[in-house]
Structure formats: structure tokens, C-alpha cells
Length: 137
Image (cartoon, rainbow, N blue to C red; front, side, top):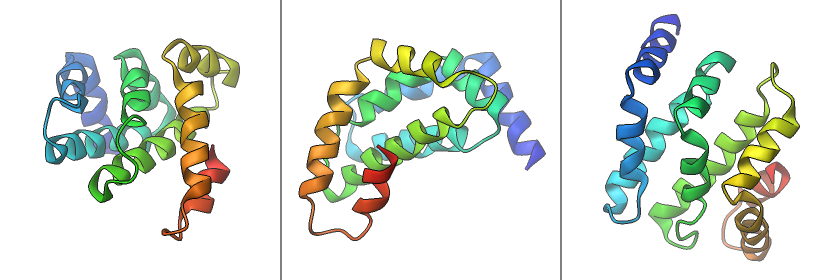
């Protein structure tokens, strides 16, 4: 949707991203964090330019922070899985080398948490969708 993309880019430009990502903090109720996660997801599923604007507005640390949610909590699990999908989509940006994103994500502590998530997912026998997320990691 071109109008939606323009709106997302406008949100990045005026600095609303930094306001919204504050609600990703664990000090807010899970309901609020889920809304913040859904908001972030819209940017990560947009075009390359919008995703790059999201990154420039400080979006990568938020994606890493979402991985620290409790995977075993049914409501917070959706935040973790959404974050994995979003990280995957960041790496799908074609106009930047993947190693640039690797460096940035490493700077924000992604690797230790991703390794932990891989272990947690590999132990999950309750959900049918874990293979999809293991493949993404």
C-alpha cells in the first residue's frame, strides 16, 4: 500500500518511532508491549527504504530487546517470534551488505540472545511452528 508506506516514512521522519519503541520496555504491561511489537512489525514488513529508516531511528536495539521476552508466556511468545521474523526481514534488505547488519546487531547484543533462543526453540515440543523459526535463526 503506497499510502501506508508514505505514512510509515513520515512517522520515521518526525521521530515518532523513538516514542513508540519506549513502550517495548519490560516496565510496561505485556498488552502495551504487544502493541509496540505489532507497530514495529509493520515497518519490518515494508519496503527496503522504510526498513532502513526504521533502522536509522534506532529500531535494531528494540528487535533485540523483544528477544528477551519470556518465550514460554503465551502472550509474550508472539513478541519473540515477531522479532525473529523482523530480524529476518532486516537481513533481506538488498541495498546494504548483510555484514553491515551483522555488525550492528552484534553491537546491540543479538548473538548471545539468538543462541539462547535457538536452544529454547529446539526444546519446544508444544508448538508446531518452531521449525520455521529455527530455520530463520
